Image 1 (cartoon, helix red, strand yellow):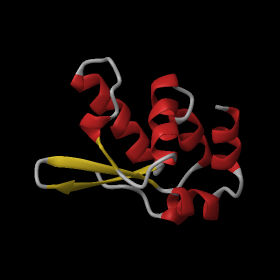
Image 2 (tube, helix red, strand yellow):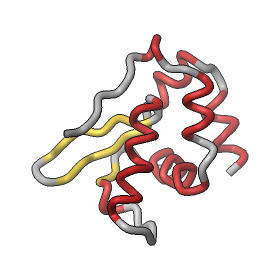
Image 3 (tube, one colour):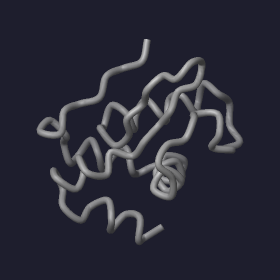
Image 4 (tube, helix red, strand yellow):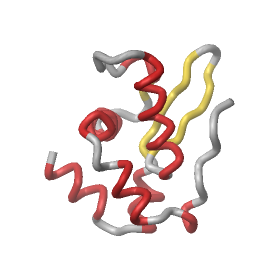
Length: 98
């Protein structure tokens, strides 16, 4: 079962920063920043599906991404507005550093 995402007011800086501390998760965020929505299987990251699912779960739990089911695909979006509302400038700074 897919885990739920936290509400904007419940986003925690330490959890968000931890989620962004991994190169694979940063790559996922970078790709999502360049697109509106991407299916989990379309990221072209060379690693086992279970490992990639783990990274998506951490990003979702931190409130960085939102995932919805569309048929058999899991569609991901970056929660840019929520992150900007809670931590102004953080996501922009991270993306600029990439």
